[in-house]
Length: 410
Image (cartoon, rainbow, N blue to C red):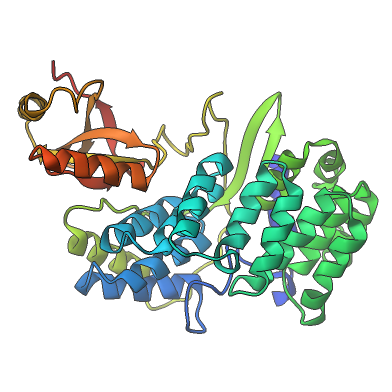
C-alpha cells in the first residue's frame, strides 16, 4: 500500500518543473477559472465573493470546481449543493455532484447525476471528461472513450485526452494511447511522462514503464516497479481506479492510497446557516501569511479500507461521507427536536410512514434530519411533498465533523 502511494508521487514529482502537475487525481485542469491562476488562488477569490454574496451561482460553481481540483471532494459537494439550491434548473450543479461521486470512487452513484444534467441541457462536451471516468471505473471502456473524445472539444480537453490515453491502454491499445498523447507531448504537457509510464505498464510492458520513469527521474523506479508489474493483472475497472484515483486492490479487498496535504482544506459547507461566518473563516485560512513563501512538505501517507458495502473515507478518525439530507429543524435540545418530529409526523402519518429521524451534532447545536437521499432531485421532490403539509425542509450536506445518529422520537 505504502509503495503505491510512492508510485503516485514518484510519477508526478520531478527535480524541476517539467513534471510538476496537480496532485488532484481527477482534476479537469483549467476549467475552474477564467483567469490564469492556480486552483488555490481561484478558490480564495471565489470564497471572498461568496462572503458578500453567498448565493452567487457562477461563483459557487467555480468554487466547486476549484475545490475538486484541489482534491477536496467534500468541499466541492457543499458548493455544488448550494448552487443547486440557487438554480435547480441548471445542469451545472448536477454535473458537479456527478464529478464529486467519481472523485470519491463511486461511479454508480455518479451516473444518475450525469443523466439529470443531460436532461437539464448539459452536453457531453461539458460532462464527458467525468462521465467517461465513471464508465472507465465500471469497466465500460468503449463508452468512456466516446465521452472523452466528446470532451476533447470543450474546456477539459487536455484532461480528457490524458484519460483517453489511459483508457485506450486499459483496452490494450498501446499505439492508440501513445497517439492520443502526442499532441500533449508536442506542447510539453507536464502530465505526459506519468501517463506514458502507465500506458506501458497497463499494456503489459512494465520494463518500458520503468525505463520511462528513469528517463525523467534516474534511479527512482525501484520503489514503484512492483506495482507497475501488477497493473496488467487487474480488472479493467481496477486499472482505471489505480491510474486515475490511486485506488489499488490489496489483500482481497480495495485499499485506498493517496497523498493528503498536511493542512487539508476544510471547506464542506452546511447549506442552510451562517454562510458568511464560515466563508470569512475560510478566506482567512486561505490567505495565510504573506511571507515567507510556503514550505513544500512531504505528503502525509493516508490509507484506509472501506467496509464491504460502501467506501467511507477515513483519515484520523471515523468520518461520514457527504450525503444529502433534509433538515427539518434545529436547536440545542435534542429532546425538543424529538417532540417537534412527532408534531410534524402527526400532520401526515402516511407521508412520514417509514421515515426515521436523525440528529446531527456540530459545535454546540443540533439539527433534525431525515434521509439520506439518493440524490438532489429526490430530496427536492420530498421537500415539496413536505411543504404541502406545512413542513419546511431544506437540503443539508453533512461534513466529516458532523456526528449523525438516529434520533429516538417514538
